Image 1 (cartoon, rainbow, N blue to C red):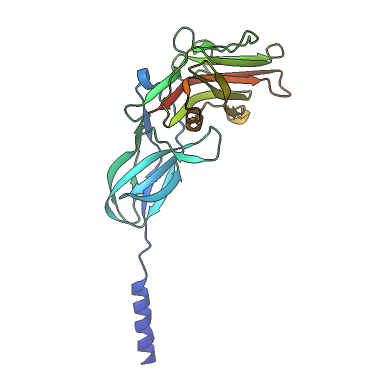
Image 2 (cartoon, one colour):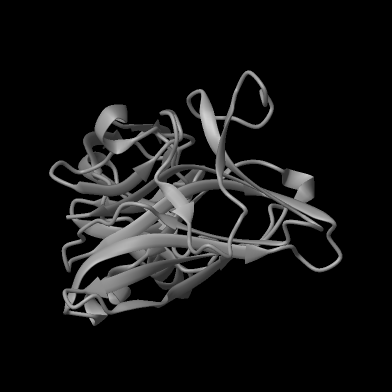
Length: 287
């Protein structure tokens, strides 16, 4: 009798255990497309997938990913593109200027469902200060008469191992003679006081800093915001990076500002006898 009673308890206990056999969602890659004329080249640095299933957050996963889901059957999947905030920072955010990807998936336990999200910019965005160095000249000039080091365009024909997007990119060269530079956009631009990001691609053997100048109607200018520094590219992984810098605080703090300009500056790094900074696909994105 005791054995029978114990067997019943074990059967009941086993029956109450949840089925933890997962279905699997896999995202190995994604696509990102742009309207090149309006938005610029399709350069990006999407590193994470913010995953939602039937409207419920399933967490943030670094791409490529293989995630277990304790569900089966038909479900609505939504994936948002995640980036590293502030260029090289550790903060990861859902980039609000990219569209999300939605689809219906069929999950089966112990089986893989593979998805390839498609991302693009949301419609109706503003792209100010856009520079891809494809035209004659560029939007940058010297900050003052004391500056002499310019940013120049270089071509894929002359630098086939450097130019990645289009036919040209920008280059700033530093040496023992030209030890520093400060350049600023020769044109000013308006930015609505909403969410704002600066995006750019860079490849560099020298550190440099980025900021914005704001000016009020009476001509008062300020170049104290923000100072965002970028380190030289790792020589062991010398590849282009796409960086995102939030400017929202700085474009909202001065409510009297009537226009803005973008500036970059830097000096040759310690122990260096020369340095070079390559730039491309600069754009300020806002609503």
